[in-house]
Image (cartoon, rainbow over all chains, first blue to last red; front, side):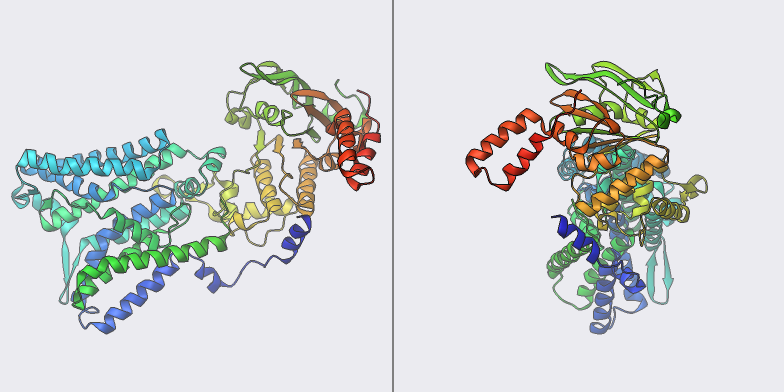
Length: 347
Length: 291
């Protein structure tokens, strides 16, 4: 054993100083390559994909998934899952819809109440996970189903329907609508403000992760929770903050979809939580936590948006989308596994 | 053990930590009792013992994880009780546990400052002072003779010895006066153990009081000034380095009588001329030091 140690020390490879090699070790690199490949493929294969009109469509599609994927990625870096993230987008929109159309509340107040409620659900998720020590997968699966039930049952009980109607007639609607649903026309393409939100969220998340104490703690609690506690990282605060961040992102996406379409279905968001996770993993997040990037997750969502719309442009059967996503996920996990071995993360 | 009065220890007459007849009971089980020793600035106190001797219990009391059931703990000559590891840390008693409290996938410099990050700016623009932290990590490690090629590499890519040294350097940088090292060489090979031992010596030379827990007398003897021997929850005594040789230390640790019977047993099964038996006989032949 001792001889082996000396040999290992003596023959260990020097650290790669080459900037290109460094670049390749970044978590988002796989997603970047894949995004370029998908973009080039559909640009060549279909004539509408690489036009302003086409770009407006797939960017819009990627934006809402992107916002959620970034939040879910940050949560995954922190070592947790949130399966209730999808249904929470519908939950937040339904709160606003019911409070304004049925109870006649000011739309600004309703939007604020929605935010507070959703953040409270996020905090509850975090608190339950930390207090019980149960895997977040199970805890948030629970909140997922609770919220999905509430969405359907309460909406039906209060409004008598399974979707919100008449949002546009709500007083104050026009004052808040541009914030979440505005669009600009560039050439013959329509670009929604959600794309801007997506960029803002990605930029803030990247800055927080790499340049603040909170970001340092997120990587630490995801990478080695016990060690983090020993050096004085506030585990509870960090994790609850993470779940609240995901909830906050779900609120933003809920508002975007509500004010863009001026309606919301009671089952909005159900089933999308896995797409967020796929985008995050394709973007280089490790399922075990402690490694990943917000930009990678945003690229993962871009791939999703491009494929989703590209398949339509190519006039293929859109049912193939999920098969494609599954293949992407497997490839991404294999790539991540290899990266992890290289990084020498022993657990 | 009484307060040392010899010339070379004059500068450290009052020990940083002194324990008097300390003990710990878990319900009816007596994990440790009657332990007395001292930790002086600029000296290494080694705690030796086999598995289950009570080493972990002893350091947990020093580190503030457990409070002693009996006896006294003195800090700078005054009695203290620590309510938590944080309280011990606040008075400068830092413990480096076997798992090192590092996050393998994070860069060395982030690990170095984890939990005590340096920031600049204010309000929402308060951000990590990356440049300063990298520089300090680099210089702190270089000062201690560890030449890392790159503080940006994940700490998981370092060798076990280097990781151990980073963990110790971190404790030293953040103001430790007493450094408790829990089996730092247990999982290391010969060369890497050497790296860590040299590092322990450097910490001692910087004026820290070091508590070095180990079950290997060959690691303890070269750096130790004082040796506390534990066996099944009791003290076999504290010895100054000048009062004990390494073979006596080894003999005491193995427990002379037990070793004797083991030799006879092995002689029957392996034959008297086997090399293991010869080695054991040599150990037994070593005279046990007087208490």
